[in-house]
Image (cartoon, rainbow, N blue to C red; front, side):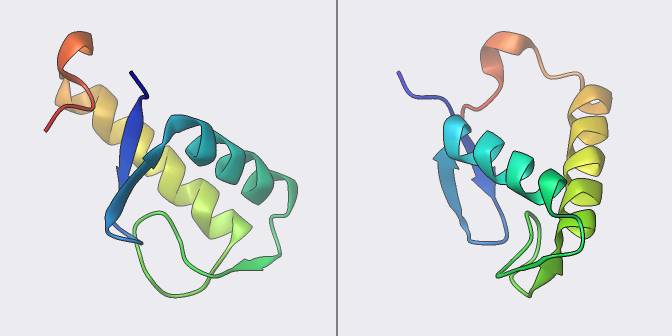
Length: 73
C-alpha cells in the first residue's frame, strides 16, 4: 500500500515519497521560486513552502487523529 498525502495546491493526492522529496528540495533552496506551494496554487518560495509544511505538521499534531486513520478518506 502506497502512503499518500493530499496537496490542496494541486488538488490531488501524491505519494509520501514525492512529498518528502519536494520538502527537501524546498528546504535546500529557500530563496528559489517554485511553481506552487503545498496549500496554494500560485508560485511560492522555498521558505514559504517550509512554512506551509510546518503549519501542516502543527495542524496534524493538534487534530489528534489516530495513527491508523491518518491518510484515509
